[in-house]
Image (cartoon, rainbow, N blue to C red; front, side, top):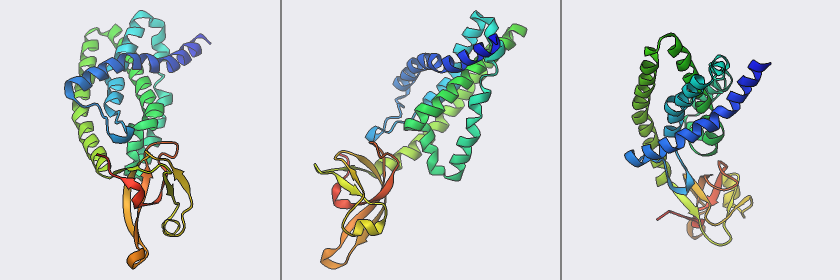
Length: 249
């Protein structure tokens, strides 16, 4: 019973404790490198924070907890199993549709799933380091050095992904203009006929995916297929009349 309590306490507390350590490190990292993941429309890339939690902050928190309270090591080494079970689903989802990979490193998906998973696994890694350090103290420094080296390798890889994933989105970014907003129609035919669908308010950010011309001659007008980025309808796709969209300055 006591072991189960220790397991659950670490499972739920390891994430906030790791984030408390990771956030100052991330701010320092962003200040030194200038890579803060910010993009227009409130889209934020947090891949660097993920690996800080996984390879730096998490191991530090887990190792410190294991050194201060050795009884936690037994269960702490195993708490990675449950959250790690989510990783195959994330990987399969990203492989099925590469564009969906961004959902796991940007915005809500990162905050609710990827960051907690990385934090818990990193904490458990720290517990493993604490356990191995009791057998051979030299391993502690070696394992932390290996973890940091892996972090250094992953940083430029994530930077390349950040540039490739966010830059195209920035160039396709639009904002809804006009006090009355604009109608997001479910399909092309609905956008070309009298409009019906979701009402997107002024200022909503969308990503332009495709452009089409409705009608002929003087009655022709452009419509765009978009993906909503901000607001309550985020990630919804549909068609809007192009006159209601504006490129950011």
